[in-house]
Image 1: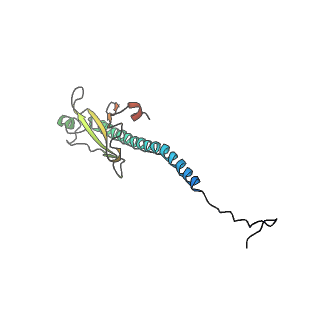
Image 2 (image 1 turned 45 degrees about the vertical axis):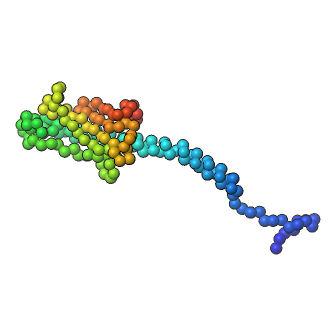
Image 3 (image 1 turned 120 degrees about the horizontal axis):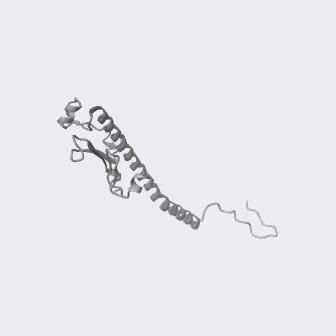
Length: 164
């Protein structure tokens, strides 16, 4: 039953609940603007986190090689003189981690290169490298490197790639 206004006027229509099309469109536009601002920041944070994990794996592998040097007087045992000096059998030292992250999908491939060139003798020098792969391919920092002397390098801006 409809209510009647006082004074004999026509009955009032019930007020409808809901949103107008304009209100919904404005809300969608605001959400789209917020997403457009937030998404690049999110992607940058994910890349920085992946890069930080690769740097951690490089440092862990460098510590492993330093421990090997302490025991065998060289970083790897492929050189016969190094092997005999350390009284160890010749053979390559296997890195504990060959990818970053250490489990799951690789975002960086970790490799080591030994050098016997001057001033390095008997395999006394190494360079660890973390090459981007998978979702990190095309990262602005490129391949991250770390030497036995602690020298860090990358294919991008040093401050962006190593110090952040």
